Amino acid sequence: MKKRRIVRRARLMRPTDGLLPLVFILVSALGRSSVAEKVYLSTLFPALFALASARGLRIAFSEQPSMRKAAGSVKLALALQFIGAQAFLVLDLIRNRGQFVLSNAIFIAVGMLLNIEHVFYEYLFATGDDASAVRVRVITAALAAAGIMMTSPASGDGALPYALEWLLGGAAMAAMVAAVIGRGVGGRLRGRVNDRVLRCAPPAIVQSAIYPLMWMMALMLLRPVMFDALTAVPFFAGLTVYELSRTPFRRDGRESKGFNIAMLIIALLGVGIASLHYVPGAQGYLFNYIRKWSHEVPAAGVMIAVAAVCGFGMYGGIWRRE
Picture (cartoon, rainbow, N blue to C red):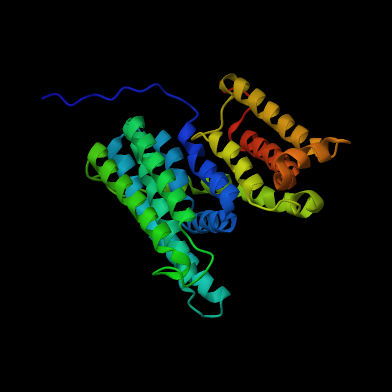
């Protein structure tokens, strides 16, 4: 029996890259902003301690035509997720003067599991089975949303503090589903461990950290605008734009024209949204129709513009390769 051959059309943008940021927007709007922020940070910092290897896999795969070599990169990336989570846990212990905080450890475990899911998500795209990768990310987004919404403001409401067993269980299930589907599609990870993902770490770390750093800069430079926001919706709105701009490489001038125009339009749109809040009469109009969400408008506009600039800086290009 012939093995079915998977045919795909190469695309520079993957819509599913924006699913988790969109989930964070949704749950933040529904009253779980602080939990969404903590899940994001608990995913980001262990990922950075893991040398951004989950994100770096996309770069590594673009340079590895052999699936055996790609499998070797996946092995190393998986090991690094455990190392990164352990390193961040040690940092948390130091920050708390040696006191073990169970809820913090659970969030770190959730972040590690979501990073493991990210590794297999990238691996599935590398195998050519885009449909399975999409299914994995949709499942992860649904489980993450449900887990965050099931958390409780009170520490003693569940089997674990803040009923975090739902979030932890959802993240574990997402990682398990991704691993099972990844192995089913790509087979056993037979390749010898290689260091390609380590060589891709510098650009991957910069790509992972640039948007949060620009957010911190916006907080310092635009305090009246940014601190007026009541939730993390503005941050995640920008993160959605930034994640959707991802590619394994910087586009050259020939393939970047449409992308550059899109980023320029999004940046101008963000500036327009932020400015609208200060147009005479517009502030009252916004407040009358969207009430408390009017506080999110200027910050969201700023972060959308910032995300467009970050997207162009990391993935856009104006030169042509010979």
